[in-house]
Image 1: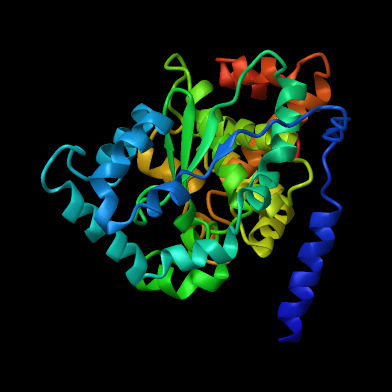
Image 2 (image 1 turned 180 degrees about the vertical axis):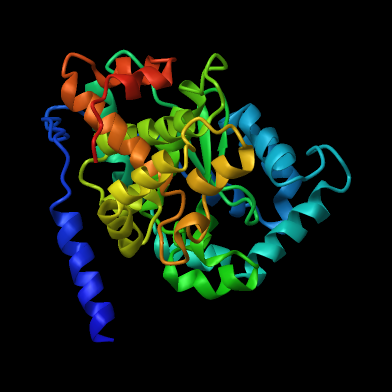
Length: 337
């Protein structure tokens, strides 16, 4: 036990000393966040069994095409004018009640005034870095434990039942959701997933890049740099979807991971399975044992991006996100963990 405690203490010390030469502290105090968040989930579940069909015109008038997108595209109900719509609607409501979804949502997200501030810091920083760009509106939904995020052209629908936290962990476990995924199913991850979705849609990997490990590392690392710029006050392990110990491991062993990748000549390997194992989600990174952080090669990618930005202060976050030649970021980074 003593050895374990000493190891954890050492990791915490190393993590605390592992700061990078990047200034994420910018003045956004004068910026109005203007978070556009709509509690669609409250309106939808307020429909009573005996007023299903009479409520549809009102919901369509208020939400437009999103109502049909939600009912048909997200939760798989038949069209609202179908005779089976009412019974299928009740089946979905009963399913949510069976798992106490509505009750737990009321506990974790009691009102919009409590929910919208989660996004305020990110919205302020986004407008600082991208003053001419527009963020999509946020609609909260219940999707029956499907995906966490459903993006459209101008709306991002977020499934609140996927962010209920440790108090709902036993239910998540009963649904067969792995522990490493449950770690991310907390309210603090809502803005992280929102901005991650935005970045993936607006700055996809360019097809001109060779699909190799280094490019994937830098792509994932740039995404994390984007998140850090937008949410500098959010703990790093939340931004990464890690436990605190995961983050401390990644920070402490970054140079070891990098040396391994170089020594094994893996940086330009284009094996999809290898790339996923070193950069993708999971309980840990297989190559470094079950105590390691998952997808830890991406942490080196983040280090590359941090080093590049520290050495090129003339490059704005917006310009960074627009770079299509990802390897050029490494070539000009002077990365030396």
